[in-house]
Image (cartoon, rainbow, N blue to C red; front, top):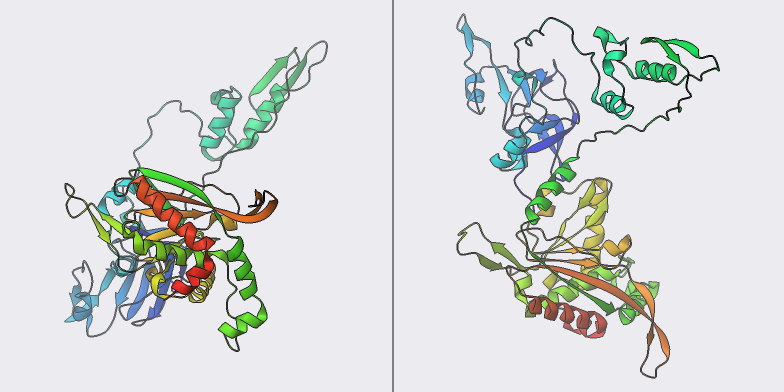
Length: 462
């Protein structure tokens, strides 16, 4: 699910200019995609300059900081740098060996994507070493329009005010928000029967007709995307090219929930975990196990679509292991770590792994390895609310399952009496280029049978 990373956010610096560092000393902490990683020094030396501030986006392959390397092994250390500068010599000794560490983020983040770099070229902050040093071109002489921010331009346009009618009181004649408000107050002063004259920042204004008092308008704000949101933007943009086949059905989970509540009682739980109550069982681990059992019969849904090897002859890669990504809502955004080898784990083991990954996700301690290798995705949106959803497939996977909220509904029984059942809505999306609708429907109904006959599911566990 992870594409090549092109930028990382600087979370915190552990050094500042003038600090002396040794090899393996912590330099900074960055967030690449959805994992926080510490970067350590590869050299002994003195920090000369930092090219980014905290929370800046650092471009993969660009300089991170300047370090003045000291010692007798400068020449050997310089060979480790991506682009070594030619050192100056004085009296047989190296006068200065300042080089730029370029590959630290590259080694943590993984391969770059040139095309994505082109998309963001000019929009991301460049290091100070790349900023232009030549002075700006001189402005032409003559009358110039007053300086004004985009937000104030919007305000002026909304109230049909000419900016040149306002005298700016800011630096270099810049028009401030207070200047606009004073002007509007002067324009909207209440008139008398004989007319009233008021003096504002724009001069003398005479008003003899009543005018409406303007109400202050809310201003727009530009908020940068977080690294997690950047990754979601790129992945979902690629998903637009996938034709989605949607399938939705309701599943009776009344027997499953009855069993789950019984197992969660203390006596039964201690039978499974002597001396340890173990994780409380939710519906999700049962759904993962039912999916795995159904995929034994319908392996095409546990596959990747390979269109890169030969665009003219795409192929399916049937995955031997059942590695299911589970969507977890966190303060950082939606994270999708992977539960591995579902086919060889019990429901209790799956529940424990889900608890472990959820805790790491909410603490921000998931590693890049926790996101790799998913063969199918399950989004338990029902933990928040909702029923029917339309989940989006993440390439190269073939499908995704959305799980709605379990609800009690009245149903006619066999004797035509109304009984209460607990049902959950399962919403499937599948890549229609690789699988047909009938295969998806058959697999979905197989999952329903496993969940509705949970006693048989327990017998089938490996």
